[in-house]
Length: 416
Image (cartoon, rainbow, N blue to C red; front, side, top):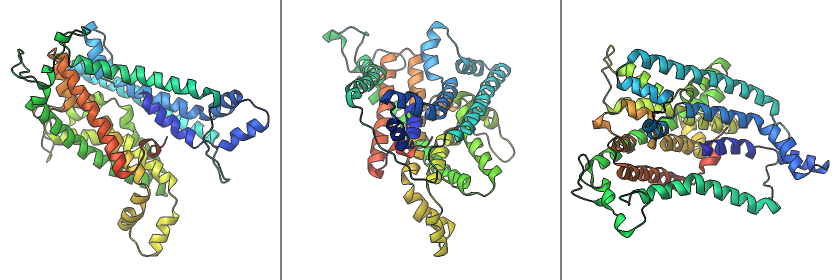
């Protein structure tokens, strides 16, 4: 979750007025004094808010505790909830889900308090401000080395290990006869549930098709809805409605995915009035994913509308343009970057998401993450790792392609 902290904290740093640094240096402050006594105190609300939000997100993390904790019988709330649902202990599952949601609500209240506190640290007012990059000087090489070390340790080495594991029969044995491509393109494998390599398996392509359809539709829908929510939150004269929409659309972020999925399962497992039972269909996955990803989309939309003044819309309204025409011709083109961010963040999160799908997906609606988890349960670790690499490739290259085609930047489109 380090990238989220970088995005959130970096967004606040980009809005920091460089003239405050200049004032401190004119008064004789050293570079380190400026960092510790000027910049860091003003960035404290953004840093604390990022920490709170990441805590809330980690609270519902399922994949990592399941894969690493299950062999040693180490449980967290999310894995305990999954086990209770799998064993049909509905009462226990309800209590665990309620506990997770309660912690999430408390976290939301803490974050709201931090947001109110952040108003004391406003640095951009009616006067002009300056956003200027600072030269690192002697610290350039150490800073670059630190960033490279973080990337290598957190991304490079794990991905390299993952890639090597998919072409080795036995881990960590670097002999020529130990390398194989059977887990990718092999056929007639001597296994019970995996007869071919993953690239030749129809189950993989069915899961990939489901993933792209479900995640794609949910991301596009949540991106558009997020921009509309941002429009209403910023433009509405009714303050209560603005606050309500802001908090309601953000609440799913603090409700862990597995608890969110359990609520959807209880709600749509049986017919209710004119609505048929949705469990086992693509529809319930799309609906749950839209609701689960709205925090990303709504925050991008609110950030976009905060930066957009009323003047362009008022000019178009005077010229006779209706609301829909103003949205299509003015708001969306101007805030294209934030709209793309509102689509890409749900896409990235959804493509690698597991907590929702592990509860709501069935074999006919299998996605790549649940397919990979099933291979882990069958102890086909190499094949499961190959699927994980495919997921990472789709998320990375899909995001890169979308940014290139739309000429947008993911970091610049995300507000704090």
